[in-house]
Image 1 (tube, rainbow, N blue to C red):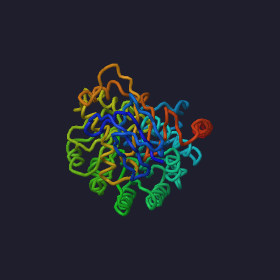
Image 2: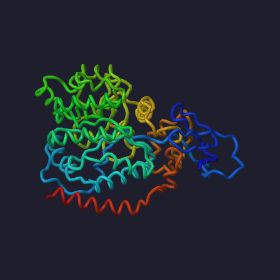
Image 3: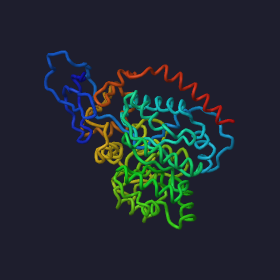
Image 4: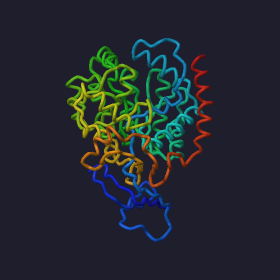
Length: 422
């Protein structure tokens, strides 16, 4: 059944034009929206009164990590990390090795719900579970489908746990891409050998996909590449063919030199910025200098709130980046351009968010960006429509039982933490 949003103000996410209108929202990946001047007399539709509310295209996350969902509140690692490599070794690689299918499913269900409640109807995810590789991507996909959040998944292929597990990652990726849209995931240059990189690029080419990889998140990635391969990370990726795909996503890109920046800018690859994660790990602050305009925002598993991510990019970028109001919003919305340019499904016009934004000042197209950065946040998300389906109503998930999922997640988190401490 179609949804009819009545008496709302639609904000065009591209032009920022404000239009008082009624909107008929049709269901499905190819579903469209229709602007109506009058409310239809028939009662065939689910009607939502949007009087005093604002309607706009929902949000999307350019780089997430489902596998981090059960980390919140866990105990200290066995060793206090002294650098980024030890953060990976003693926290995240300890965690991902302990994941099993039940934990992965709970992580995915919670992440999808968190996305939805924050107005995010599409997430690009980068997953790792080296001792539960097979079927992991389909487990995540099914969980996201249940909640109603669109997705573009990949498995984080890496040699760090041995070539056999790297092979399983390649096999899982190939099997998944044979039936669903996705990407070929790689961890980072310093954990991916030449043969695995070669096979991943070949798989991306064979499946008309792209590479999703962390790039120069820490200086150690560049140092390793220069010592081991006598070249910098982006040069290595370019020589392997990883930058030739318009679907390729390069995460972080903090420590690139000028020549690497020119290589990225001259390629069709996209860059995803994850400011809060970079700050948390003390690895550096993103600078867009010399890169193309193909920069989008992600959260790197820190949370699922893209409005918060945009604000972090703006405020933290004041001293290091050429970023202003309009550039922040452009990067915030650039995920949609990436998805649309590459013909990925699940982010059509019938993905909408209804904002109950209680502003005390005038709000219009001329000052929208000021409200975007200093006013609108996730607490204003009232209703969320994904592919024409109402998945959040009055702040509550409508598609799954949130209480049961959270109860199960707490059980799975306890199991995960106990395994990590063994």
